[in-house]
Length: 353
Image (cartoon, rainbow, N blue to C red; front, side, top):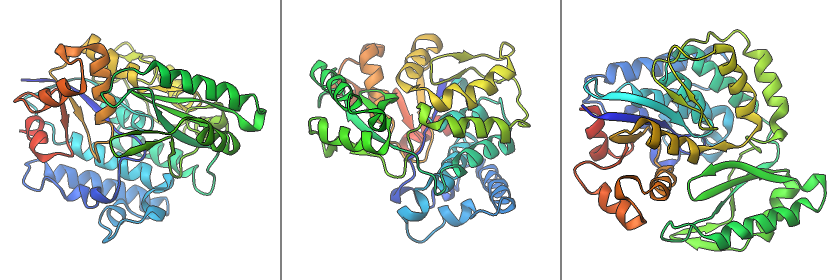
């Protein structure tokens, strides 16, 4: 038996390579359950008058205009994550769950605080607020070097740019949105994001050039989302909350434990702080490593774009002797990789068999 901490991805994790993701793992004994979740998601989307998850996932071609907007991407990603979670082998023990940004809603399901229908409704409703209503934007910038070691120079560059841009006036506001391993996600007004893109020094790590703006993203996890927060509290007030079945780690690093969770506080966090304040994914991973001591971290699909961020926290923690990018790569090639990505069939086998 292995001890697993399960991680749910957020927006931006379903791309061209993930088309037909829900048709994967056909040989698994729990594939029928995977399809049952898809059928439930389709029913809920149809009742809401929205395109079905089957139509999105089964499309012949990937369309950024169709697959990227929050009103479609959120529910699609949630369904993929839930379907992957259904495959985890019973012989393993899930000791904790967490997610990045929108992945917190998936965590409420994998942690057992919400059933599938209520969790899906939360995801779909919050995602629907983005339809024709993108507010501000997000950009991403690294504060590590190409070896995934901390770069004080890049941290200082971000601090200088924030000071400079925010001095231009309220319409140029920018702040921290997500702490994502060795990257910072910054968010703000349209004018602020545009100014930051022109102010931050250009850097390249591997094939990626920074800074770059995340497509079709509002200024999530900032006060700009206050209206969405208030709307969610009102329209989702009847959601049926329960005690988590396994510890859930939120975006501030707080552990919501079984039999110790105040359900009204969980709702307040989900529609309040989680929406309008920075989401510290790095801290949630750090707490998982320190407090839960897993054998593996399991990254649910779709995609695996969080892999680098997770590895960077492992390096910062020197977890199990991993002190560099090279150490992490070597560990991933072992018989017991610290990070199992469900997007990679050869790794997924370790968690689902």
